[in-house]
Length: 218
Image (cartoon, rainbow, N blue to C red):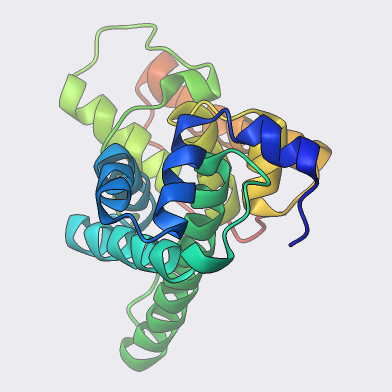
């Protein structure tokens, strides 16, 4: 990737970019510092996506391995976090695609019907605009929200997590997911609408949601 001098100077102000430039020069301490800064954030993101802490740790390790292998060709053409989460998005997409293939094989082999949604770990009620209108059992409400998130298509869930947990702008999410900002805006809108449709009856009236994983993630 060719990076202009102005872009390089602008992103060199990012302290994490400076650390990565030191990593490019084989500074092991700088790499350890980047791992310390981002490992927890990556594990959290992956855990929400794959629903398994051990696999999330493995995926985070894979991302850092890719970062280290790419150190020699690194160019500061974006914020370090954007570059890192772009790598993480590719790793997540591969993991989710493999999981989907395994699930299809399992369904064909055992004819077990629809699989239950695997829960995520944190509530994202603000994503759907839905807050409880009545007193609810906290554990039950948390489980319902987790399952609603799991029922989203993979791309919608990734976009929501990058927006809510990482505080990324449309432009930053677009770069990570290799989409246009307008496409990201549309993706997030559909994700929030899907969450609202599922969660509103529950929070308003206690109606148990009907879970159906999204087939269309466009």
